[in-house]
Length: 463
Image 1 (tube, rainbow, N blue to C red):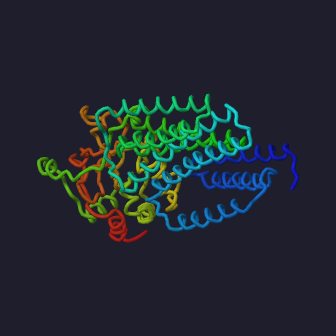
Image 2: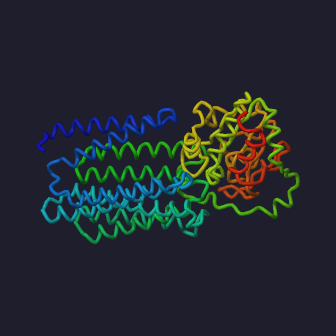
Image 3: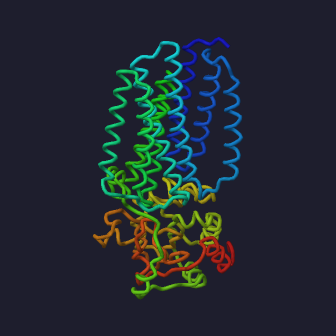
């Protein structure tokens, strides 16, 4: 099909607009479905008309790749659990990074053979390769931490930051040598250093900072796509990568602000890990009260306002549908129910919002931290489901706590606080939750899904 270059530019312009509308739609749960539709339509246009471009002469390997990707993607989509979404996102980022590295090397060899290798192209391939390599290994480490294959604790050692600086300077040095003198060995070495740097940058980052890491790697993958777009002379890939890179960077900033941490303090790492059972300290501190499902059901039934605080424990128990049943049960009795979502609840940005939307909890019942904190003092019951660090009063009261200064949901200000937990285990930051010991707080031990189902049964269903 012989189409003019102007026509391709017009189609790419429409696809870019659809991508922009997609990102804008994803900014709110109400418009997220529409945003996804716009993004998918834009991607379909981009792929179809790129395949129709005159420069594409052989479809054999392209079709084979598309079929393999479609099969694998379909299988993953059908089998993936919502609790596994954070590590899936990290895995997908790694694919983008590796693709950038492969494209960079492929472009280098092709243009070397045809004699069209320029310093500008070499700069593009060098930059694309090292950004892609850092993204790949960094995402693999993040995947391992989120999946539980690697420890969520920070891995630190003496001279770590100095090592990262030396690696970064060495990578830049070999990049300059490659661009100026066309030494293939410099290209290989700078890429190898970037692979190593991706590992050393992510291993010191602890579990509490993983939501920021996910959004940061999202940004890296976008800039890797930008570099690839320059290498392939594809303006749509450049623009799309810029959308992803900038939005990921903005989201990382928002996450850091929500945790009262600077971006550089996150990169330097050392915060948060896999909390251990606080048996000794819990035994030493008295006053922890436990409550039965019946106790909680009685308090809920006699409340006029309830705020539910979801956390990663809700995701692990896959309790979102049981929570929706509880919501229906309470609202049928005329009880006002709201959901308080912290920006870093879960293991990736928007994790709780996705789960609540999946169970069809009304959007107007879900509120962010800054909008709902003022309502806790007038709330009869705050029901915390699997959340920990984001409701820990130590962030406000204990200057020695690593959580100190992080904005939290003020659940402790409610008249009564019930926390659904499997055990006294600390949160992902590895810090004991002071809320457990408050006079107005009680723990309901057990699986979150089973607890919510038992609550519905105790309340007599939806009325």
